[in-house]
Image (tube, rainbow, N blue to C red; front, top):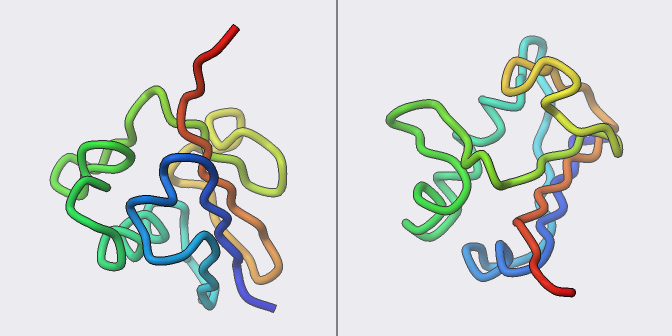
Amino acid sequence: MPVCVDIIGHARSLFGCSRYAFEAKPGFTLKGLMEELSKLARPDFRKSIYDVATGKMNEHIAVFVNAREARSLKGLDTELRDGDVVTILPPMAGG
């Protein structure tokens, strides 16, 4: 079972679809996943979510691995395994 990526909200506009699947080879990390996603996304992905040049994520983006916020794990160094579900959730406003 691959690593599934669910893209929520306006972040979907950066991609052609809202769900992707990747094979989790040993050592596959959240950073590696973001780099793979950047190859599939529109150029705004770098500004909105992840900048490949700096290796940093937008601080306002929430990324979850199996419903746990990635910052509470190992951040971009979180190792991914087959069957994991990664959710990218952009900031939301409202009231």
